[in-house]
Length: 80
Image (cartoon, rainbow, N blue to C red; front, side):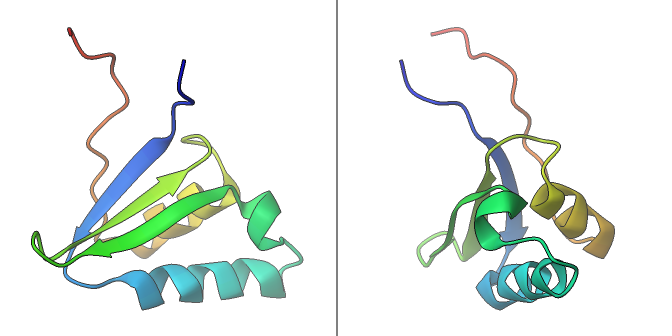
């Protein structure tokens, strides 16, 4: 079974915003690993940034929520 990650999305290329959030956390003594980052990517065809965190309650998740502009599609199970 695959791991489940929490997903944030934002219109446009917001990779630098994620890097800034990680930098702010690092300045407060939280490493990138401890921040809960799994993956961040800019999807050019969708013109959207996708951020995946280890869970919905990581330091990085709280940081990007505080900055605004991000959507959280949810982590509900899909009926497949």
